[in-house]
Image (tube, rainbow over all chains, first blue to last red; front, side, top):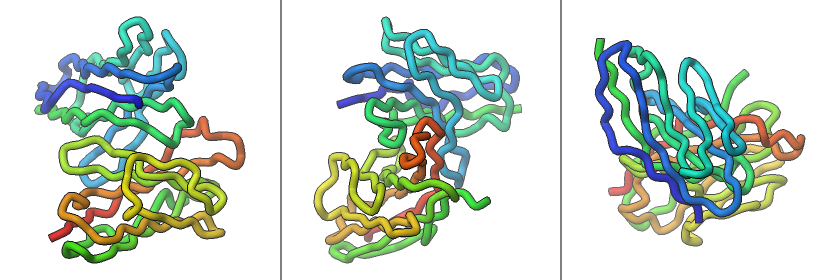
Length: 112
Length: 116
């Protein structure tokens, strides 16, 4: 079955620093790829997605590009804010967007 | 418009007991999926309900069962609880029937189950 590997956290950054969270996957066929964010005490929220190779998903200053050749979907943001502090999950879906396979999550802590 | 609502928010049970968790999907959604999120882990897919039938199932034992009602709400039942069942249980809704599963999956805030 599918599997997702994310870099371990926590990732600790100062405000306005550049963010990269690495994600690689194994999947059968051609999965869709997602980044979800979980703020403390809240449910998961979709941050961005990409459905085919070379697609770039973007939202709220975050970006990730679907790299089929390296089976990767790294999350980036040019300038993080304190409000970006949360846990970020990379996920794949090969049989509909409802049945996702998640990585273990990466906690991001941004200090002023 | 209420999003996905789950009840209760917290629950404490002892080993061997049975538990029922409840979920109401976002308005307009007809499909409910359940996920288990153990501490420090990503969510794991348990099963999905559509048209009151279990449509897909993840790698979970038969102790985990569910139900979907005509109003699309859903229950997750876990029998013979084990310590390892302690986790955050997340419900997510989407629209299969309208052919718009491309819409994003909406998650509830979850039910935190502690098994002592």
